[in-house]
Image (cartoon, rainbow, N blue to C red; front, side, top):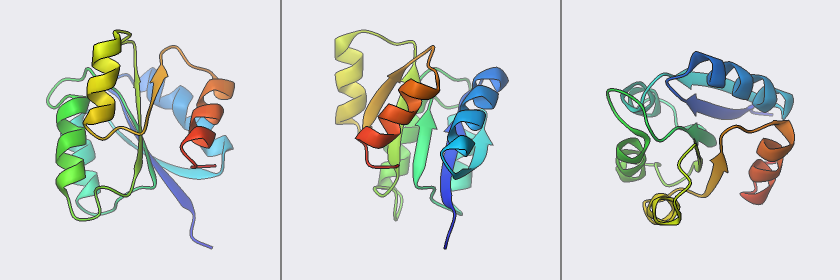
Amino acid sequence: MTPRTCLIVDDSRIIRKVARRIVEGLGFEVDEAADGSEALAFCGGVIPEVILLDWSMPVMDGMTFLRRLRALPGGMAPKVLFCTIETRAERIAEALLAGADDYVMKPFDGEILTSKFAEVGAV
């Protein structure tokens, strides 16, 4: 059986570490990227099943990454969960219109992340 894969994209090493622990507990193999540019380079080689994506990052933000990901061959396949402190309804709508599958507010815990993964059909 092929392992399930998740890419965690966040400029915070601490957020990536916390998310990694939770997502690995769900049975996923996890890779990390510190910004959208690193994530896009990763996805040019391997498209993960799930991407946990921060909005505000240096080099390339989450929204730019999402639009570029969705334009890649196979780029419509991953479930993308925006994971950010952004709370305005219009920004959440913008993310969903750009191709995000769901939205996770920071700070999150294992229960919240597990339920979001379940809502998008990833677990």
